[in-house]
Length: 305
Image 1 (cartoon, one colour):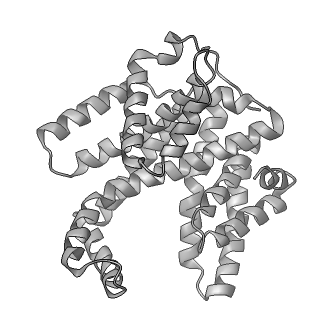
Image 2 (spheres, rainbow, N blue to C red; image 1 turned 90 degrees about the horizontal axis):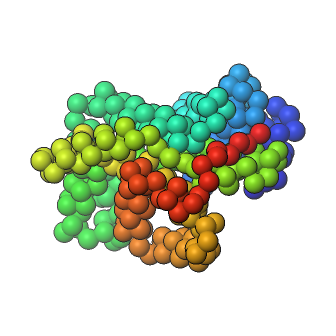
């Protein structure tokens, strides 16, 4: 992947080519959307928001032309790529200014709240809106005999109930993954080792821990799935990133080995809900107890050129 970063940094036309090709390929292969967004973030990090916006403009026009040529319609594709690129462009600018992954993650969570608000603005009942969208999809799975007819409606209801929060949380995760890849690329090209130090120091501010406690309390008092549940899910996404950063940081301390990291990533596909929850809890606890400081991890913050 470092080849992509090196190619994108050779010039504006090369960066536009890489971002555009990856974006078009992401239509059949969605994971590539993260790499396409990472190119935008890398340019914003290294050359500033103005250059990043120029890249978005040129790449957006290129995507529109290719989409019109390949699919006969450009607008949906342009909307898709702007939804990928604009959040990481903002986050890249924030990180370039404050040089703090924790602060930038806080801004990403704010963008997640915005993504949640948009769903409520589009429909006063986003769960019902998602129910209407999901019913044809589940019906097609029933016709393909991939889902039992007896549980199809229950599946629709369960998915629709969680979709508003899941979309907002997924929005934050994708943007942060792209930003982290871009920062890793930047470090590899201009400051080897800088990203590792910076990522190890990722911490969310304590006021978000207080808000999380409030959200958890409200969830306990009102267990029905709703806006409070979605906001809690969004905050847990932030604590997940801090938990992962903490595990990486502790791995470098005496008494810890790389086996911790290997075990964490090896178990992820098999025990994802439990492991993700555990990492989020660990990240939340770290805000109060500062495990890195207690175990002797340095407090100096990394800088990536």
